[in-house]
Length: 372
Image (tube, rainbow, N blue to C red; front, side):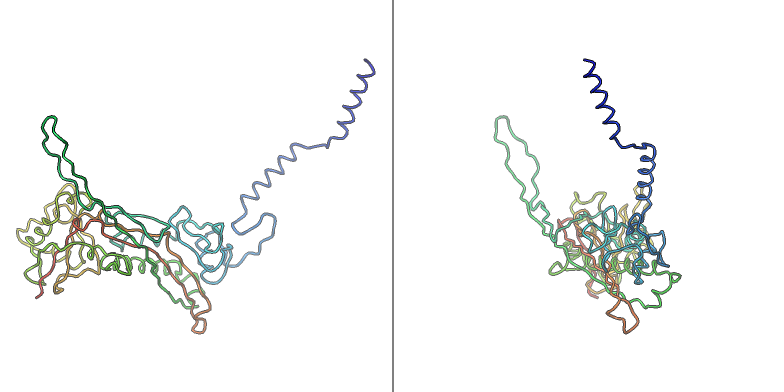
């Protein structure tokens, strides 16, 4: 028994001799340092690898983006495309399968804020969709169900099923090319960020205002006016709209479409023509719910026919939730420094994809101006 015990003790001593001497505290410190270094590593930089800093590099990712537009690449953006998405990280490297390096929302939000101030479809309570498809099929109610009827005891139930239809909303591509001089690109002090965001926002809003108001729906979106129904109300002349004519137009829209989503759409000139009327027009009685006319808001569509346009469709009234607006992803900004180099210019290419369609024509009706 004693011999066995000695053998066991000998084995234990041999095993201990073979064990590596581990300094737990040192290992923890090393791991902690490694994690901190990893967190401090900027996008595009590899931990432990020296990084050559460009003069234009800044901790601000927006400044890094501007440097990218100027031809430098301090933050490791991939390719010549930057995509402004509608997800949590709006800007992505267009050719990087892993999404590139995230840029904060600030620059994209600047564009969005300016666009939403200029685009009526961003203000009105239209039905919005975000999709990754080229077409959306939206079910609609083609024939509404009739009311319940009185039924005697043990008599058959009244059978009346509503009929359903379908609206195909197609997504179209819209583009804009901006030429920027090399001199403008050379200096940060000239407000390059504000210049680009303003141009993109105004171009985007102008496209939305025009196509989502007047486009016919053939090889382009269906505008809200093109898809609406004529009210049958025609003004006595092209140069004026009376309170009575405006009210009659409202009355042609069925009662279910007079709700919190209802309002007017018209050009700015028409709006102020109506608001400037004097006399007992009872148009502008203040209401607790606010609004511009009888509690309903007026949305400005700069491309709509204004008062004074012969036979123009000057005022639209109805339920804006019966108009669908869909956009695919976001806005793409591409840069080409070579195409216009001979002229000392850099090309910036903007792309946006969206579509629109009226879901219920009876929910939206327009007033027509007289021919003379």
